Image (cartoon, rainbow, N blue to C red; front, top):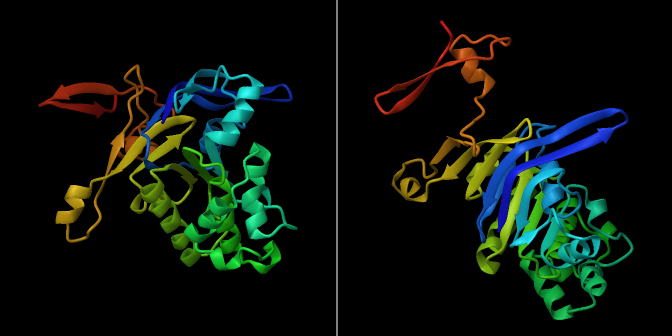
Length: 284
């Protein structure tokens, strides 16, 4: 569904150039439920904006559902945003029109695409558990209910890819669990590809795979191992893997380097092959 190769994004701010992504590589399979985590400024929201067609890459390759977002015309980009991708924001004000009912909000993307389907809009509200609130306006809904309406809106035009930017960032823990359960159910029942950006590392327990981004590059992945989890007393097993780019490079967490006595100013390591393992050592 998604292929990113050596993806670069550079923003110009006054006379400065800010490199938000610097050679990111990532793939997402169709039907996958995936999370992206990273510290503030790591580039995760920049990546989501480009996947959503809200921003263009500066260099590299970016394909979604076989479409080359790097070479799209403006008209093709509009069609892509209407038909291929749905977006859920953390801030409800970016998702919802306050003077419309929940049902009218869900129907709005359909009207923009010229294909209103009330039956589908009602089905979507039922999917997110708000069929009984379809005629309520936003001030009559809680923050968590508004976010669930936003999910229904994002699915109004039957997209193949659903993107969510910190969708649980402004709700309490209980409501966050409900929202993540909805993403899981939509992923299973509709075969929908879902990519969620978050700062919550506990998301690894809710999705198939978590990609960690550091300094604008993919640094590691956390994979859920279902077979092992079934045999585990804890019932939940994850494995973190470092990610190699196409040149064989990887990012090593600073705390790992400090643990072997490497100083901030050091930029070299010894590499040795030992009994089928690659061993990294501080310089002599």
